Image 1: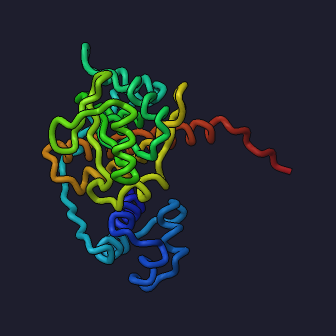
Image 2: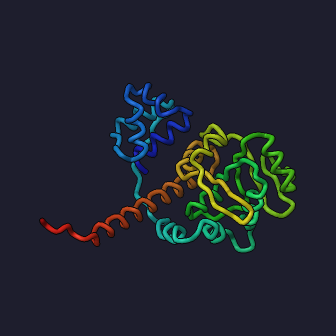
Image 3: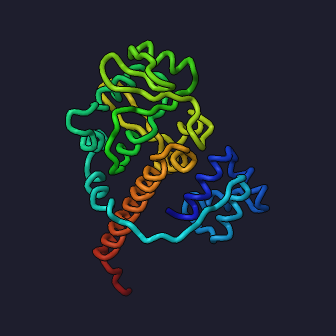
Length: 250
């Protein structure tokens, strides 16, 4: 993870625009934009100050590097998103793919979050049988339940008549709800329509802000996916550079 990732996560968690954060830091909005695009690397002090301006604290510590997930993530990244989900489904467990298609068919505004969204990105964590969704409103949740024949079983968890469970919310930890997640959401196409799922940094932001006992492990997994994907892009860039023809002197 980069300092720019931390600035972006903190800014979105605080619900600030780039201009609002820049005003608090006494810099130009373009500076924040360059940090977040990766055009310029913020210093450690810049990152610390930006996070503080968002009302948060950078909790940095040293730990032994653990790349044990990297080989599995590399395999996941070679697969199509739907196959990534299937590969992480326990034998005899709930198949999330048909439910994702059914969600697309409803057309209800909602973004997939949690482990299924992580699996779509390449996370190595085994799925636990529930699809977490952040819907635009309470009316959107009710529309989903009406169309998918869902009945409440515990808190915000609903069981579907066709099998499987949905965990529904309108506000995810560390976010400002559906609109916050939708602007950076990614998509997959099914036969029945489009499925929207939260971006990796947003999943990391949710896990980082969550009190769930599994959240720390999920955050580490999402961070590992980011690191593996960046390492792969770097290797590909270096390979292209190594094979590029050398310009001939005039």
